[in-house]
Image (cartoon, rainbow, N blue to C red):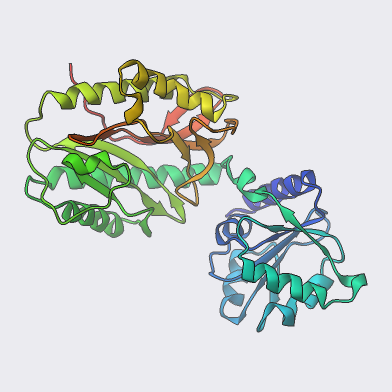
Length: 368
């Protein structure tokens, strides 16, 4: 993370914490910690004061001190030893008695109890007020900076390459697991640190399950095959879905595929900044509803993507999120017929004032 990006992220988090009426924010979620600090170790507590004249703190144990100093040069590194009650008082002295927001959505019941017990043991004059904070960092993470966008593009490009490789070698008779493994092998050999999630390869009627896991079942000629996959590069995820057929297809496939493609392209062309996630979802849902398959599109249109495969915003029938410039999100309508199979088409891309710009370069089928 460059100094400019690090300073920008800290400024945005401080502003969001100030808006939440906090004096400082305690970050314990590993993903939020990595976003705020650049530190990728598995253990650490972060405190970011709203006052930018005071340095942010990263508390971690002996295993990660050198790594923390290297990855988080703008943070004061505090060494922790033992249970939280043994070092909490020393950490508190460094930022004072304030309204300290903690990540209620991420702190476990046991960890919360340990934090409150440790805090209660401090003299009243030194004890910060612990208050539940909303999704402060997640709200900041929803809008991607230039460095994140560049990394997400790289992850999407590698995803394209892995799909192109696997789809060029797969043959009828391969199992779903075999194709999933072919995708992962290519991705890992060519620069992925991991897959963003277990690849979905679902053939035939199995494809009617949107989150089906690959089976040791052969892919047969003529069956629709839903392939949902994404690589992870420098912590950032990609997400793409294509539906293919090996060999000749039946008459149902192009009919269902064209409906889903029309829904996908309608949403991709019409989604815009300022729209609600519910309204964005409706762009694609109306196309599928009008074709008579509304009941077979049971999930939301899409979601944000970044350090996690599912981030804010949510694009779905119940979403209250507002779409903003700088968000990276998916557009992934689908139709699922239990006695036949499924079709889903998904691109990931950037939303800005000019609209949606797909990162996914893999071609889509065309039936003319």
